[in-house]
Image 1 (cartoon, rainbow, N blue to C red):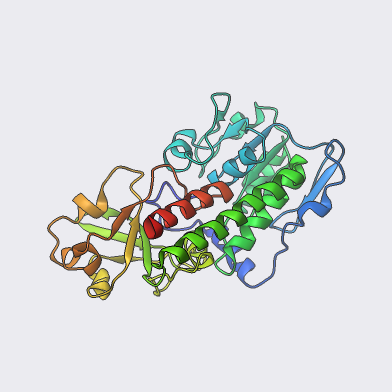
Image 2 (image 1 turned 120 degrees about the vertical axis):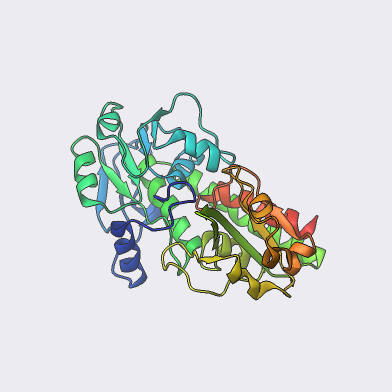
Length: 329
């Protein structure tokens, strides 16, 4: 996902085009484990763009250019040799699946260094964008696998497909099956905990945000986002019903727009990875904000640091753990 931390709201045009095509059913999905012939022999898969990607042997030296894919590769037992924006990964995404000190930074997620990638002698580059020029430049040195990254129609199914297509090329299909089984078990565990607590009737609203000039921009995560899909999977209701971006399940509003929740009982969960304390210090003294029922009730919950809301199964498990903490502890 090529957002610059959480502050870059616009999705790059090329990526938006691929996501729009996906919504219309015009692209093919990863084929899963069936494409892998052996853990030590040739491997192949069909990526999000419908391209067959073939390797003579499972990839062992992998560069990942988006943080969800970094997490997935490492979760399957292959520490990436190269990652775009390691510092950002550690801040925003690294709690669930940390990187070790062998990993090389290959530039930003928006503009990775082709020279840095080529110098690592990698077997595979995993990315989300369909930037044809970037793909062509990288493929002069190493094969490229393009994953989907997000789908407002089925984010959990999409994540499973992304895991499987990566596993195909790593020869890690058994590990992928175990990873997904653990994730599904966490869903059931979380759902049971919330049901036992009897608190699941209260809706939640997850949001992050930032300050633009003198205004606070708030970005709610709808039911179609990854966070929202996890909430739905454990029986929770998402309070945001407004428009979304059509790609990541993200809405947009401001403090005035939050007035719709003045009398609504809900649990407000927010992200503070950048340390701005937006939903405490940033809105302090705002009459609309302080009059919201969930604010007056003290029903505000800060997501633990380093949990990526656009991540893979392990980040998703961390989000589920926090849903359980908010609703069942």
